[in-house]
Length: 561
Image (tube, rainbow, N blue to C red):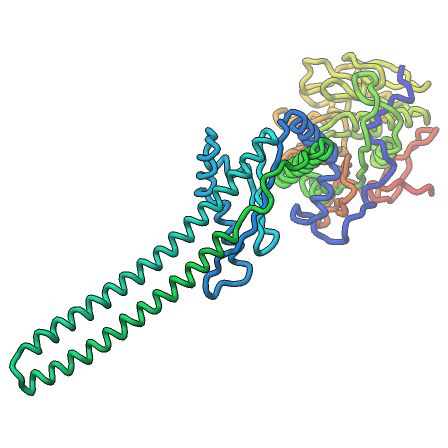
């Protein structure tokens, strides 16, 4: 017995998808921001789950990680500035020296720790709060170890710096000594030549050569004196500078343990980092998946692939409770909306019952619920309704409580309906509308049920490997129901072509689960005959099961005139 409360709650909202908050642009591609926003909104549960998982992982790492302790030491320096160097550069040079591998290696040797220089460098940082102060902060497994490392680094840095300054002073001194030796050798060489020339007999040539040598001796002696004076001045200046750089640089704040970080602060930091990482990862997967997906979601895209306009689109809000047949069921406004549209889409038939095929392109549950809702509504108006369920599992028949193969009479909400379910071996079921001249005829119970019906509603999912020619024996026109994001353009196009190859007309398509941000109209770019009569006989049902004529376009309910 069919319970009126047992309809799908798969369509749980009462809103048309034409209402949205997207900017008024005509772009429907994947490159606009609205597409990404719609994708993230649609997959919100997915990336929120990743964010929560990331936060939990961060908390787990914070709980399991070993506590670290820190110590710092402060040094007051007299930086050695090079001529023309910008202000502030000397202290940055000192900072780079303190962070160098050479200083780290000396400190590591003093401590005797069995670790690499690179790993030791990663345990400390050097900052320069002013142009004369360096602060070395070290992390270690214990407070005492942190203090020892900080002091060792400070000592190693000052020693390395002293050696560096002394080496520079010695290099300059050696350079001047080499220049002095060269000047002295030049003076000695000229004096030797003068002595040699003086021993020669007196002549005009001898006197001229002595005069030239004396001039050269005076120049060489002057150069030697200049170099010796420069060396003396440099030695005095260098000694003063070296003394200032070395003796005026010292540790003013020996290594001391810093207060440990708050446990709560650490938990918050790790949780925040995990949350941000999980959020970015989840959103990245959603966006990349949407960009590379070939599934259709826009009304215009579905209409182009189907070759028929999408006259109605509804949204899915939530899954409902489980009912008979394992499907989520309950009353839904959008179920009734789709059923009302199907009611207006049923064309009249010059002979035999009025008929319509509902063709689910992907998910069969929503189309089954809509077809059952229409069947019950028409039966309540006094029509003799036959429901043919050609889908695997017979979802519509099961909602009516008749899932077994065969022709059965069922009662739904106090009304009688006839349900036809093909047998499991009946791969291509023959319908009651099959011409009698055909080589294959429908079974007598099926023919009898069709002959006694005022309205024949068929639910049929088409398989490209089987084809859809048999559908013409059950209906003369069809409405395709597409679930957004479930089918590719090739799949939707194949279903539309199978309907047309069966000699039927595709009245229109219905899009289920459309995005709120979809602003497309779902019409074809060029006027084409979508298989519906713009003027002609249309189906209308009332308490007397009468047929009337109206001139509405498909998808609009006939006027009452």
